[in-house]
Image (cartoon, rainbow, N blue to C red; front, side, top):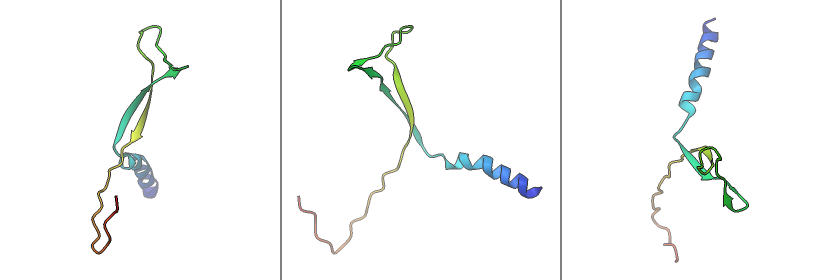
Length: 70
């Protein structure tokens, strides 16, 4: 019984730690090259998604290599 409770607790807690930093990205909806407007509010419709943000890691320069040609 202890193992069952432990497994359930880990299953519930796992998604909390698995989530990274996310950002909401919205893009205007277009049909035939024109923006689609909501008839009730008159605002442009948008398609939104949650995107996971990745950190960019800067590399270190390796000694003893030839410099890049530009």
